[in-house]
Length: 246
Image (tube, rainbow, N blue to C red; front, side, top):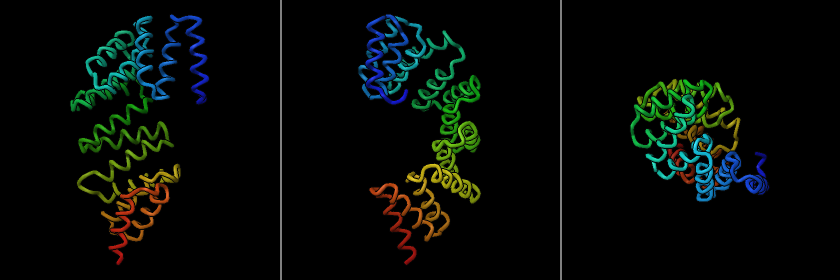
């Protein structure tokens, strides 16, 4: 947990050498391998875990996640349904089912699954983010409330603030009030993370495209370039703003 993954793996190997039937050790080692992006060994360890303990929920969930990454949705559903038979109120299982439905374009079932996840656990941050993204994709203003709930749960979350700001910025028809709120959220992001190039870029874009405030656009695009020197879109849009300034 402190980031010393190599040492952690050595200790987990010792645990498995002492007791090869200890499912939590297989699960923990699979998680460590996942962190190092050793995905094939991770899958092998998860399968070994489930051979030993077919009802071990952490291994079922991680294995379902790997199936989702590989777009093996039927296998993922099998694992998730097994989890829900064992633990009917498992938020991660409903959340992952929602992710599958969203990938498949079944937005109604995606919304239903994400909604169930947050009903099971009203403090489930990832569930509110998923709901917000799903409603935002449909241009539904309910998205804003889900992102705001996520921010209430984690006031310093750059992810939640960015998703809210971007959804406000992209909402059609364009609203001055929404643009102002988006700029407020982007400013908060830059205060939390001065190197967040995307937040600076999007502020510049609002000033360039919607407000025709070209001096401010140049300023924000320059901040984006300072944070990310190879941000070619920022150079291009700063060029457009400078062109408009003559």
